[in-house]
Image 1 (cartoon, rainbow, N blue to C red):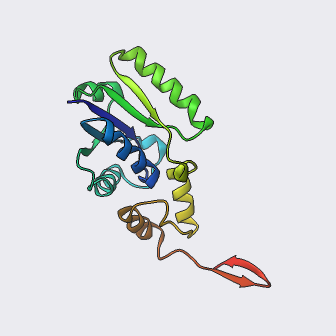
Image 2 (cartoon, one colour):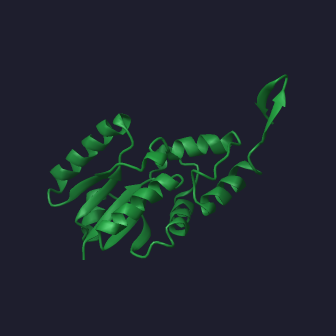
Image 3 (cartoon, rainbow, N blue to C red):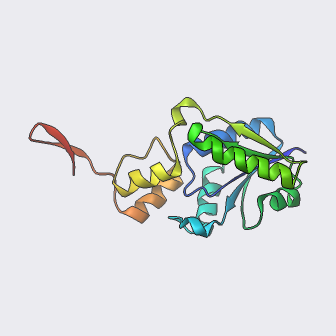
Length: 174
């Protein structure tokens, strides 16, 4: 059985992440979405909640499992007997970091391949940090995140997104 690990902080998981998960699930027998603890990044959601949100978001994908992990990625990949690490790469801004991590992992574990997925063009710009910023400012989120994440963001930041209204001929957020 060919297993791939898709690691990330997923704070929170977005439709762009799910796009990568679904495409990886077509190529591998099993995909494990591995939610990293990464408290040094000061996540919006606690680790356990990020795992649960990812689990709810990926629930309909038959060969995908979601787990949390808090160790060196190559150790986790070996523990799961996976053959590959899946990474999404949106643009040049991701390349340097992802390339450095892939080469480091290759040095530590040459038997593990890293496979990069470019997201679908409709999610190319999307990131969890952009989603968090939109949520904090009351922006419209439905086209960026699955419903369990939308509900969690509503709880975290309050009610529905603010609607634009006209003030002095210009649209203003209320």
